[in-house]
Image (cartoon, rainbow, N blue to C red; front, top):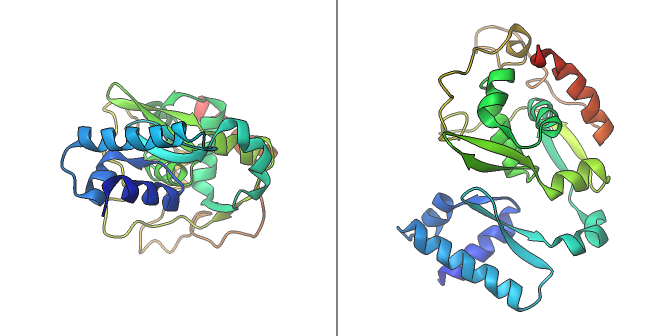
Length: 227
């Protein structure tokens, strides 16, 4: 199977950023440089044919997306998505501080954000760009389409567990200066198996759609993390 076509199919099916390590595993190619060359060639193919689709490069990762000049005309066809309440809270904080260091979000909210960021990246609302030992978190065009321009809807879902892997799915270790989560943020953490307690993230979410105004309300709750 031709690696370039395999990568193209994977980017199309995933609908999210795929990292170079993921693409290496998919294609069986050992060299990260070779994988990048193949993706760049694929991006060139789309450019040369004048396609409305482009291969966009994030932080050592790639996503297949609609070009900006076409996104406004087709935004109404965007699929609805469901994310956990915890991830929505983290997204509201990132929305207030676009380009913030991941380590700073950890310091403000707690290590739960590693799972949240993974979920937000997978859903295409946030992308990461390496910055020193940490990463900067940026909003995507999909975020703006859903929350600022009303394309598609976002409903809450219970926190998703990642089976067979570290809970965060993120290779980046928490920075040394990261402080323990505050009492308020700890209340949102998943309870131990024998605690008998439940949280918002564990209880079934009510049906409903979120708009950018809903995120403003969620962001107001996060003002406590600014103290």
